[in-house]
Image (cartoon, rainbow, N blue to C red):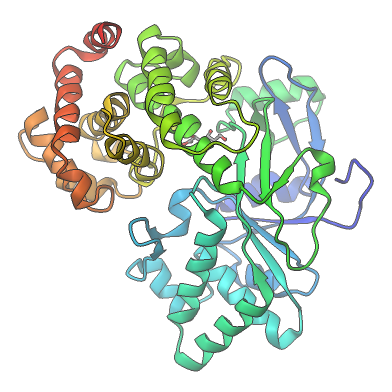
Length: 441
Ligand code: CS2
């Protein structure tokens, strides 16, 4: 928007990573490079939209102040699934979460939901006016969910305070849903060196990304917004359909490739999708199981979308690691894979391929040391594992893990059989055996 000549908006960037502010953004006045990688990549571009970078960890008070300021019209969130600290089964804020309860007790808030709620609380007395809160994370109904969680926080405050905030939110805040799609790996030292060669300048905050980008937004803004449509964003009333297409096709296959890839010692998603059998399993999961269980947004060709996803995964210049995509599985499986298991079962079909994805996550949890398992529930997951580990013990133990599987799915006999089937192959024959089995079906 700045490049298009609209200078009236700027971004205060907030991160929980102190080093991002101290070492990367602050010393360079918020400037950072976006370096596209892969076919059709545009030249590196320096972005100047961040006018201030704040560490939410070191300076939570400032975050609350900025959200409470009249000049702030929109708060966007990209904090990943675990940043919401919610219970996916009930879609409510986890009030037992120690960080959330500490925020509720009144310390300078450290959770995202706490910071937003406390910021909104400042707006009423300051006469700061309405505001829009926009979740950009991979969660179904992310806008509605964020609204629920902020209200849950408000409702858990002492009665008078809470009611006042709830009433203010109802009148002044909106929570549109969005779907954001762009693969962005963690920046490596080699990326920084490459950007330095391209720019002739050292940029500690450079970001690499695939050329593809998509932002679909529900047009429900309480206090104005930039004309993002001029820069390619799509405004629609049907974000939910875009969101479920993305979660159940792209993100689901991404997770599947990550866990299959990790089992086979593949470092990147492009290496994993390069294995014929893995690509076949992914394609079959998307075409035979995920696609039939979703309603596509008008104008989207499902088969073409799936092929494009596989092409994007094959981008070897991106270096998107299986470890990164495979992280936080306990937060992702239930959103990406289980709805397809349910949809397929409800339609009287076999959830064959999507069960392979779930089994490969179980295998990853079991074969990764607790200290290496990158998941907010790593300890709980490891504690749930049986001492003697084989398909027959691991599959039922992990199916009993209630923050991922609800009882009716966990007890579904065909689902369980399929998990056992795939887990046994992974366990006894490894990825090669899996290849034979996949090609065989
Ligand atoms: C990935 C996503 O890390 C992951 O779990 O599946 O971050 C993915 O790269 C983006 O959603 C693509 O838009």
